[in-house]
Amino acid sequence: MYSTRCAFLLAFASLVVVNAQSLFPSLTYNLIVSHIGYDFLGNFSWETADDPTNGRVNYVDKATALNDNLTFVSDHKFIMRADDTKKVAKSARGRDSVRIHSLDAYDDALFVLDIFHMPEGCATWPAWWTLSEEGPWPYGGEIDIIEGVNLGQGNLASLHTTPNCTMPKARSQRGFTKSTSCDTSVNSNQGCGVSFPDQDSYGTNFNAMGGGFYIMEKSSTKGVSVWFITRDSLLLLGGEPVLDLVLLSTPDAYFPTVNNCDYSKHFNAHSIVFDLTFCGDWAGSESVWNASTCATKASTCNSFVDNNPSEFTEAYWEINSLKIYTPHGLLR
Image 1 (tube, rainbow, N blue to C red):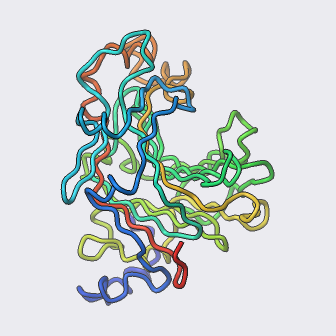
Image 2 (spheres, one colour):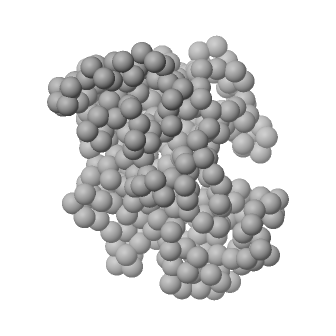
């Protein structure tokens, strides 16, 4: 999968012994928090506000999510899912689902997500992203790490910022530049997006492989980088990413914040969000819905969500762990 990685990385990897990961997980970063299983319950809040992307969704509180099995945990797993049992009344806000927000926020940091399954299927619009703790949005920026809709293949990573933040079309990344203006007031808040080259980085194909790792580096000196790492990657040792190897490799998406996007003006400490909405401004737009095979199942995205609960059995996040690292000497 990553045959295009630099040859010296392969040579370096062959020299790393089995215990190396525990001896030096990173020469640059310290692990400060590890969320596994029950850890998520005490470190995230369940949000219930209306969906800002106008989705056909009803975000439920923590107690409801646990009671209705829309959130459940074990020692080693954390799962968030949509309701897949009930039709939705036209007068209702939407299909029950979950959106969680971390209690802590981070400046420069490395986020490592080990995910076994992400939501897939028609009408789905899942996202793992970060946004400014201070706000109001878009002040302080937004970083979309995992995002896609419907039956899409291949992940899309994007930045959304205040004005005067643009990306060069050509830069050191494996992905393909979709748009260069990060300004939310331009192009209907499309943001500056990068599509990933691997078709198994999102949705059905991702889940069929047993998931993988997403890594995002948020750096005031380098900008924002995102990597997708498969479970058979040479950048793994003992089933875990060797972070220094990852940081030396070419990211799937790279957003340099030096010349045309001053990091200090557009980004500050970010908290973490996982959500799963339906339809809305992207997945449910008439052009996007009609361009997918989902349109053969219902004339509109909203009617599909309302009347087909069994279509949402695969609409869930199954997370093995979320680990957060900060540069040496920094606690946040």
